[in-house]
Picture 1 (cartoon, rainbow, N blue to C red):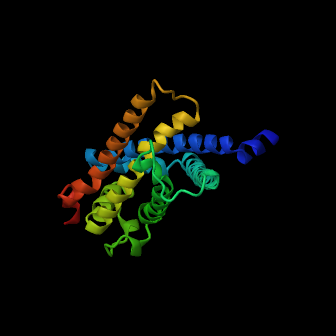
Picture 2 (picture 1 turned 180 degrees about the vertical axis):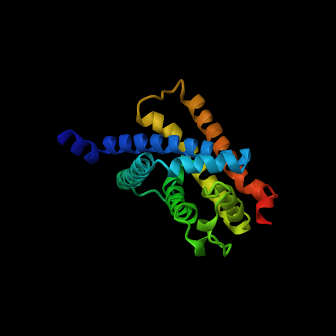
Picture 3 (picture 1 turned 60 degrees about the vertical axis):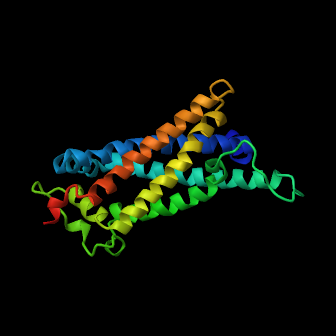
Length: 234
């Protein structure tokens, strides 16, 4: 217990917490993307995938609770580290000139806060399916396919047919991937896996992976806005 208390109390321990939880959330983002991209395989694939998740609550709920715990610890540790860094920064400069930092690294706390708002909306929109938030006037909960499964394909098509909703999702993904482009590289540094030799390669790899994640997630609302799956609206 004392070791755990020391981890939560020390600055280095908070960075480890932020790195480990960030890695766990990063894996979830990739896994969630792999599941969502099944929408391009048609209604059967994505609806079967959704039915599998819903029919295994013993797997689904522990995963949800674990994700919420990781998200909470990630936000807490990021905020504490940011406040400690700000308190330790020397004062007296007429103007702060960032050296050796990127826009992504300087806006991590801001982008993370906006991403949190986006995640809350996403959960209310497609998980809790709160009708007045989807901006379509439709109740997603009544969408079922011919096999009496929740029709995730129709839910996504109807939901992303609204340009404002799709635009917000694409913006949210852009901020998430901006966050990831720096966070993935910093994670390796916090865990002691990055040195001056591998640093440029890891930073470039993090940017490429973040870009691919952005393109993957954004391709769904973009394709629907351009007409993909519109036959279910007839």
